[in-house]
Each structure stands twice: as C-alpha cells, then as structure tokens.
Image 1 (tube, rainbow, N blue to C red):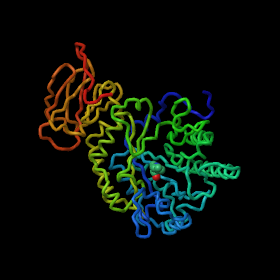
Image 2: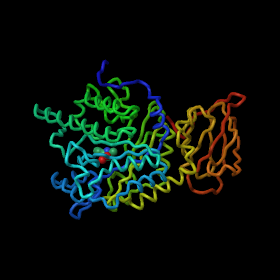
Image 3: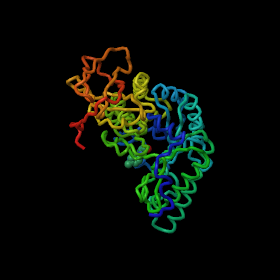
Image 4: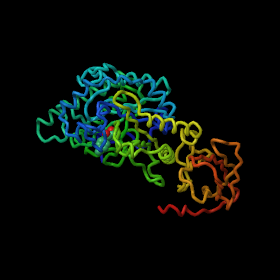
Length: 453
Ligand code: K80
C-alpha cells in the first residue's frame, strides 16, 4: 500500500548513533513534575493509582491542579546528585519527562506560562539535568507527552470544525515546543513520545511524520521512539504495511516479551518499567511500597531484555522536593554493584543466536562472538546447571565472570550438552562466561523440552 507518512525504512538503522543506543541496554527513566508533591494523596485520601494521574483519579479541577506550581520550590533538587546516582546504577542513558499529561513544563518554555520558570524554584530543570548527566557520561533523551490536560486546544476527538481548528492550534503549539526543546538542548540523543493514542492524534499521522523529520533536521542522528507515530490511516507504531515507524519499538510498557520470542530481535526495541507496581510519578503511600520490585527482579529484567536484543528503561520518580527516595537510591546502588561486576554480559550484548532459552535465566552474546554469557537468575533447585549448546558446538571453557580464577568443572554429557555443579554458592545472580568452538564432529540436539514453542 502506498503511504505518505508510513515507515521511512524497512531495516534497522546501522549508523553510529543507533549502534550506541543499542549498546546501552540499560537506561534510567525519570518521571518528575508537580504530581511528585501530592505523591498520590489528595485531601488526606490515598489514591491507589499512578501518582502522575492524580489530577484525574482524585477529580481535581484543572485550575486547582495548576496552582501546585506555586508550591514547587524543589529545594532539595540537585541535578548532579541525580546524575551521580544514575552513573553508579550503571545506566548509560536517561530519559526525562519534559512535560507530562498535566501539561506542566520542566523548562522555561516561551509557548506557555505553565513552566518551572514560573514557580518558586524558578529554574530550568531540563537544562540542569542535561548538563549534569552528560558530565557523568550519560546520554540524555527527552520524554514529551502530546496529550495535554492543561492546554485549552487539546482534543481527544475531532467532532466539529471548531475541534479541528482548536486541535490544529494545539499541534502547532506542540511542534513549537518540540523545536524549542531541540534548539535549547541540541546535545540530546533522542525523543520519547507518549500520549499519542487518542483519535485526534491518530487522525494526524502527517503531523507525527513532520515532527520526526523536523527534529531529525535539527539534531542529526536523533533517535525517535515508535510511540510518536501514526501513518496516513491512523495505524500506530507499525504502519499499515506492518513496517516499524520511528527508530525503535517502544510499546513494551510494564511488561516484557516472552523470553523465547525471538521475533522481537528483528528490530530495535526498549521496554520501560516501574519500580512499584504501577506508579511512574513518586507515590508516598503504603500501596506503592508494598509492590516494590527487588534489585534481583530488576536485574533479571535487564538480562531478559538484553537476551532479546532490547533495552531496559527503569523508571525513577523523585520526590516533590527534588530528592530521591532513599529506598530507590539503595536499589539503584544494588543494581549498579551487580553491573560493575557483571556488566560484560549486558552492555553491547544481545541475543545469543542459535542458543535456545534455558529456563534458568538468559544467554547473551556479542554478535558473532565465541563468548556467550549465562546469566542465572532462577536457581535450579537441583543446583545443577544444564548448558545446551547449539548443535555442533563444544564448550572450551566456563568461568564465573566476577571471579574468573575460581575452578569450575563442567561435565560433558554429550558433544553439545554440559552440566555445571553450582554447589552451595551464593544466592546472587551469577554470570558464567562460556567460550565455545565448533566441534570436530557434527551432532544433533533436541530443542529444550522445558519450553514448547
Ligand atoms: C498513560 C496511560 C496509561 C493507561 C498508562 C500509562 C501512561 C503513561 N505512560 C507511562 C510511560 C507513564 O508516563 C504513564 O503516566
């Protein structure tokens, strides 16, 4: 089908900027805005829903919500402290909310008064964050919500000529803001879009195409998520011919592909995840605390994404005063400590082609390398690790990544089937580095019977 605003290519980008993004594998998402102050509470009531949706869940009139800007002093905000923690957590890139659904802007935009310059803080938070994260060697991406509960011209549907005109004004406003962001922060590496699912946006595939083109003219090499895009007919992420729009698939939100689903490896993708069950903005309530994921669960997810050649974007919701919740900070340090020892299995790695999903964790590999990493996240209770190599390959060596001198004795059961005794070693997520080579003789292997596909 002939499309004017469909996918711009059929194959993944292979330029240096895209390869850099692909090698990061682990990034930090940051949701911060006015919603961090009420933190899930309104007039003493706890709302057990995403804190950044409080304006809707607590039925707060928009003008009342907008008054929160007058309390936004963020006296504990320290961009360098955020960036230093992020660096210690092992992330290689960070994506900041510049404007979420409530329309409040964390930079002094010339196109609205509803921004951080007009608060007691009177600061350009985005500018401070871009500078601080880059000082710490972390690439910066900007999140922008097209959906806007504050702007009078936002429409969910276009049911009249008046709606059409209003929404046209809104799209001009959003385009202006996006150009403004690209011009103010030209060192950013990409844009992450949200709030693009309504009928009004789907009817404007051309605008989404123009945004992608315009931003890429302003910033060469820029990376844009698929969530921005709709085509001529309103198809989202993938055009009406099934081709991916934007540069990578960004639809995995709080869920990951099945670990044996190799189809996702055909294109670049990123999954984003919350620490508590379902809040992106800071939620101070017991509900959010009870549902927190552990470092081990999150490390499992990092390895899971890497094993399918995807990136993992872990969200942090800093508190209303600009400080980071000590529990979140501790979690970031734990993940970072693990990555400091085991990052070789993650950064720059992807699917271990020809190795089937092992059930006890994940295999990762750098393309065409003879080294494969076995990330053991689910300990077999029998404490024996089966290593099923691709048919015709042999295991030359196996070492514990964080302690290569430790003597391991893999047993060869058959040409391409090995077994490692785990003994009583620790409960941590261990990584084994496996060196393989083609066996002299050809052998046949059965598919892993644990996984029926
Ligand atoms: C919006 C709407 C729904 C139903 C679920 C999540 C969201 C937003 N997307 C995430 C990336 C957050 O920004 C969340 O507020």
